[in-house]
Each structure stands twice: as C-alpha cells, then as structure tokens.
Length: 425
Image: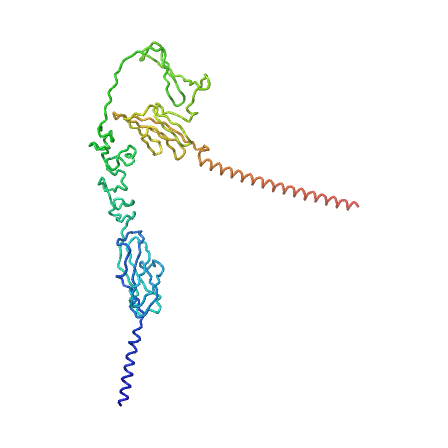
C-alpha cells in the first residue's frame, strides 16, 4: 500500500510539472500603439517624415520575423526584418512616409515569425486618427493663417501690416510705389520715406534729397521782341521720310512769314555732291511731331530715343504696344513676335502737364532673321526634294515600262517574220 501511494505521488508530481516545463519555452513578439511615433511633431501635408515603432520579445526564446507599416489599409513600405532576443530591450523599426492630404491612421503588424508566434493577440497596433496641416510652401505655417501661402516665409514678416507677407508683397513698405518702381528710381523698398525728410516717397518729387521734396517752379524767361533781320534762315526739321528746310522771306517780320517746305539735301563726306537721305533706308523713323525717334537694330528689336534732350524734372513713360512699359528716356525693346505695334510716349512735365506721342512700328514676319521663317523654308526645301525624288522615280519607272513594251513588240515582230519565212519555204 505504501509503495502504491509513493508511485502515485511521484507520477502526479511528474504530470503537473510537464505543463510548467512546456510553458517555459514560448515565442511571443508584441507591438504597442504607444510605441508608434513620428520623426516630426507637426504633420504637414507633403512632408517626408519617418515612422518608428518598437517590437518587444516577451517570450522565452529568440525570434526573427517581420513588421509591416500601413496607412489605413495601404502598405507604406516593404516589411522590415526583425531579430529580437528574448528578455532584451525592444527592437526598433522604421519606414519613410509622405504625409497625405486628409486624415489618416497608422497600423503596425508582426508577421512571418520563426519560431511561430504563440500569441497573436498582441501582433497588431492601430493608432488614432491624425489630421495633417495643409502647408503649400512648407514653411511650417498652415495655409489658413499663412500671409504668403505659396512662398515660404516662416517668420511671417509684414512690414506694412497689410496682411500680405513681405515675401509676396509687391509693395513691402506700403507707400504706394511697387518694389520694382522703387528699385528703378533707387529708393528703399522697405522704407516709405527713403530720405527721411518727412515726405513719403510716393509724394516726394525728390525722394533721394532730404533738402527738397516739392517741385520747384522754374523762373520764366524774359521775353524780348525782335524782328528777324536775316535774309534767310534755314531750319532743319527731322521727319519720318527726309530732312526738310523752311525758307523765310527777307526783311519780313516773323509774324508775317509764310514758310515753305522743301527737301534738304545733305552733303556726303566723300564728295561735294548731295543726296537725299531716306529714313526708311536706314531702318529709322520718328514720331509724327518729332518727339521721339526709333531705329530697328534687328528684325524684332528697336531703339527708342527722345529727339530733344531729356529733362531731369520730366517723367517719361513708354508703352511699346505689347504690354511692356519703361520709364527710361532711351530704351531698347525686343518684340516677341511679328506684327504692328503702336508705341506711345507719355511725358509729364514739372508742372504736371501731360502730353502723348504715338508712332507705329512693324516687325516683319518674312525675314531670314526670323527663326520661324527659316524653319518653314527648311520644311519647304525638304518637301521639294521629296517631290523631286518621287517624280524622278516615277519617270524612271515609266521609261522602264515603255522600254519593256518596245522590247516585247520587237520580239513579237521578229517571231512573226520568222513564221512568214518558214511558210514561204
């Protein structure tokens, strides 16, 4: 009886100890939603960031496997290889990720473990919903509050406090003059009073001179009446065609003169002969009232100049008829395409009087300087060569057929003669 009791006790001890032994060797990898993190604290649409996660081996045996990152149900990258030692610190894995538009979440999944994972309940971790910030210019400021949403300006500087950031404001100092105009006249685009004289640049006639700001009225010249005593006065006037002169009658007051116009010949340097100089032959011209001249320097480029000397206190504004403007007294302008353009010069004098003068210029399409004409001629030449080749080939084939027909006819006639000769014999 005692022996039987001892056997049962030993057998029971063995039976109850086996599960404990089997439980001691387990494979179990674990991911936790709290361990999923991003490389940047702020998620901006379009940014490339890195997603990290930790994988912990809570089993009793070393395990290899994979962890895969998902955006919703879409795989972000290839599965990342894991090799986690039992009882060690968690293994960290990561993938690169482009922040999408709209809300999203991240999911990590453990798979392909060896030995097989014995607890699948902790192999998946899903984050909450993330809402990224729309930021077109990637300056860290969301579009809704960015004063320049398409141009990066992290500082959001706005000198004139008009709600438009300096990076995209065409009038940074808010003085009414665009940055381009200020650059052209030499004033400071970040100061509405460059010379610090108390008068803003937009109203200051002399924005670079702290001692002057108001237009100074010129002293009118003293008028002295005088009778013209010269027998003849010649006045050369530049027109669009030739140089002309005005003859004034002898011993007559200026008020009673009746000038006549005639062609003025210009002596040449090589001889004493004279010739009429045509402005058109020189690719030159002048406006109807001889306010400005223009000269064609190439097929689509003109040089525009004032006929009279430029006045410091006058404001000049050119409109070249193609949407381009200039405030220089002498300017070279290139047109982008052929056509006729009305060029207008607007002049504002020191008293505020405005005058306009216009002239039409022509940019010819059919010129060898035009790349399009060269291209068309090249295509035409290629077409002519192709047509010539086709015509030659057709003519050769026709000649060959005619020669073949003639040869066959001669053979037929020769055979007929032979048959007649045989019959006669």
